[in-house]
Image 1 (cartoon, rainbow, N blue to C red):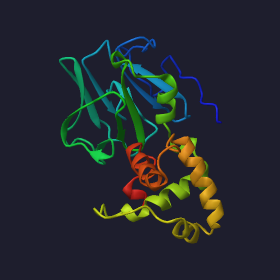
Image 2 (image 1 turned 45 degrees about the vertical axis):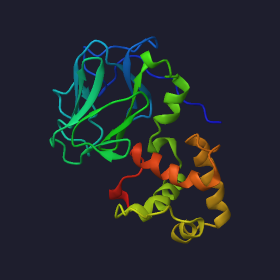
Image 3 (image 1 turned 90 degrees about the horizontal axis):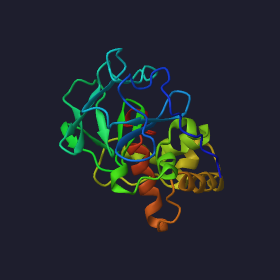
Image 4 (image 1 turned 30 degrees about the vertical axis):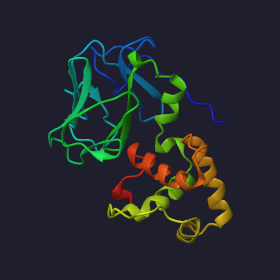
Length: 227
């Protein structure tokens, strides 16, 4: 089993601006994401009521390494006791919440994943009592968490979804093998590893592939631009 790096608890280049605090692993709402070096970053949302996300120097949470992120891409806004993600069309490439494009304002729930550009964020509400560091580490996967072969297989698996058709199904092992010039056995081996990385190995066999596609899009590991 791969060892996930411990989360960085301070700010780094491109990390949250002053005013966003350390989550402290105790209570409240927080964001988890990986920076350009693959280190897990933790941002407490408790000290603030809104957070702008983008590449621009004026944003509260900057991701300057991701060129597909707009200068001001999206905003998180606290409404009462809840947090929402807002994208009113400022971003060039859109914001995706659990794989669906955000138009306007969407409420965030514990465990939700939203993607800006090619960077994915996991939202955690520690008050819900369900947030665990190990599960956060598992969910905030990036392309750096996968080998080149695994990334290629994941993209090939998702390719039938290029047109967002209602009846699309994941590519078969034979189709993936033919596209990537691999043996079917090699594809099966890599898919088993991916199922484990995404913690879906215990799902029924007929559900694993579709769930893997769903998680790949939700985390931004595969986008329709890749297809």
